Each structure stands twice: as structure tokens, then as C-alpha cells.
Length: 79
Image (cartoon, rainbow, N blue to C red; front, side, top):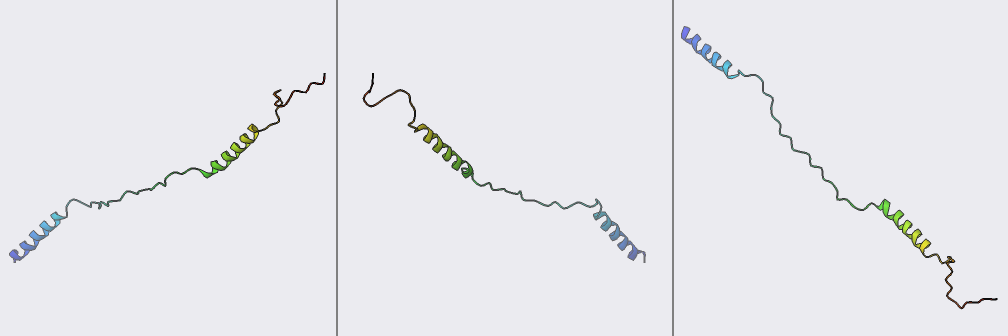
């Protein structure tokens, strides 16, 4: 009878030693998040005002109302 009790006792002692060490948390591999950036383009919000400013500057530069004393035609002096 003791022979039958020794075998389960040996199996019980060896099985419990296999579980020694405690809980180990599983390691989960996480793939990195890839953020795709869109290529930068010209800002349309700046194009229209700059074209309007260029038009105003061109209109001021082409103004022909200046009286700088330069006469192209014949000089008419009434004295």
C-alpha cells in the first residue's frame, strides 16, 4: 500500500515545482503608427491678396497725372 502512496506523492511534488516562479505577463508586440504627411502646397489664401496688391501697385505706377515739368509738345510762352 505504501508503494501506491509513494508514486502519487512523487508526482505531486514534481508537478508543483514545475509551476514555481509566479505569473509572467504576456508580451504584446505593438506595430508603430505611421502618420503619412501630405505634401505641402502653396496656400491659395495668400495668392489672391498678393495678386490684388500687385494690381494696385501697377495702377499707381502707371498714373499719368504727375506735373514734373517735362513738356513733350512745343513750348507756348505768351509773353
